[in-house]
Length: 251
Image 1 (cartoon, helix red, strand yellow):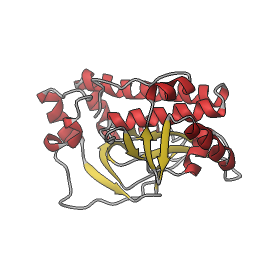
Image 2 (cartoon, one colour):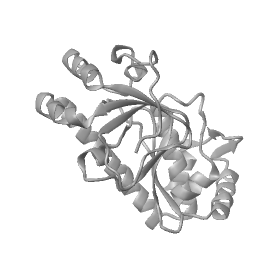
Image 3 (tube, helix red, strand yellow):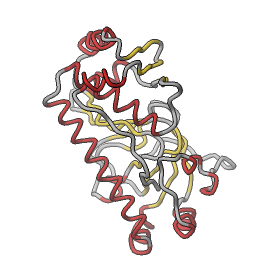
């Protein structure tokens, strides 16, 4: 199931893709760029709050986030939600629903999204003709596994303060990777409820934990503007640092 729309005249040519200007993303060869131009079939604009991929459905398309934030989540029968991770520009969405029988999670737009749309029917063509791009998709899938590993460690072993510090540091570094930070600050689009659903904690517990974290002076967060005041202190609280990806692939 897809919730969104295409708008004629608002299509970003691959040669002018803003993601290609980011120094942490790898360059396409001329042949790869020509193939990706043919592989991309459209752009989809999704409004904030819309779930455009749903648990239990299959997908004829996969997507690259061109701009905006999204998150993957699962719902329990009683309405409780677990946010699995967040998607930022250059991340791929829908691969599970394209290759497997159906999606095991849903995806919701956290902000207005622009997505590059790729058809499942041409995926085999990519794998057979361009092993380098096939490796890129494999890398992206492996990275999702890595993110899931860290999330499981947080939920299973990190304390409330540690997991909150780690998640905020992780999201800040990914936003930095996407060119969204300015002078150590970022306007996060999510609420405390989103954080609670990602951390596996109640809203009250999340609020109290954030107050404890801000009391350390490692971070400041007011009116959704998050400031990383002392990165080393935040990494120490989290029990681990998060490194910026360089030369990472995207489609």
